[in-house]
Amino acid sequence: MRADRLVATLLLIQSRGRVTAAQVAEELEVSVATARRDLEALSGAGVPVYPQPGRGGGWSLVGGARTDLSGLTESEAQALFLLLGPAASLGPEVRSTLRKLVRALPATFRADAELAADAVTVDPAGWGELPRARPEPAGLLQRAVVRRRKVRFGYRGRTGEPAERLVDPWGVVAKGDLWYLVAGTERGRRTFRLDRMSGVAVTDQPAERPADFDLGQAWREIAEHSERQRSTVTATVLVQEWLLPVLQDHFGPHLRLDDGSAASGTVRAVVAAHTVRSVAEQLAGFGPAVEVLEPEAVRLELGRIGADLVERYAAP
View 1 (tube, one colour):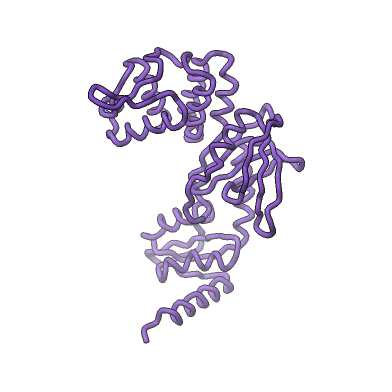
View 2 (cartoon, one colour):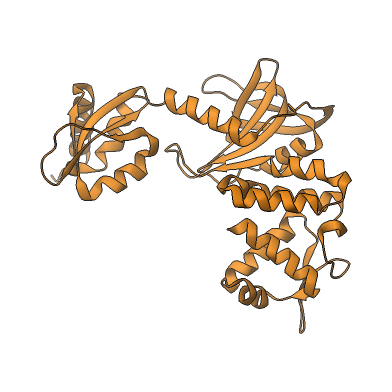
């Protein structure tokens, strides 16, 4: 996992004083390109790892080799744990590694390091949105979580003009290609899409974050609620057996197998989305390999989509 490699890379530099990307690649059994990206990620995050150009150069820590993490400054420790934190959502092994690293820090740094590691989480499953680049305010909001400072921003909902918000930032979540801020407000916990924010600014006002708050658990609750809201329209389909894995990957939790009878070579399944149009649009791309059995509304919507395509693209 990348978190393991980043920690191993940092400790390798500390033990040797200076390394090249090729040496890191050989030691950790990865490609040189991967080793170089890891080194650049450490440096870009604020960990004091810098390249030394020229003959005999390489990557080293400012101040020379160190044998443990106690030589990091407070801001450098926070930068490291901000970088490593998202990987903790991948499994208990990484969380265990982070706990051990926290214990290796000076006692005065540990609370903020733990908060930095919990300032961001990753949910790799998308919601069918188009790919988006990492929003500019993501890093700013993560630092606001660690510094415990309120953030102010304009927010445009699904309709209407942007409204100014002042919130307590609790954590940042990357889900597929979208980013969200989980925050405390006067009305309780709320979630904001980063691509709908404008004028994000960290204030000097102290922010409150529940002592027992767990970003991963909170996001699971938010995602489950959103999934239920987005799955109000279902359609029963017959899908060619060879295509089922592709359909499952596309719909994710919005697909379940159905016990009804199906012809040889096909599988019966139920898919879901938030509107009839959305179900039809997603199924249209699979052509005749997927047949909609019910409801009639989705079948009619598919017919309208097909008629529109024929009208536009049919040969003269």
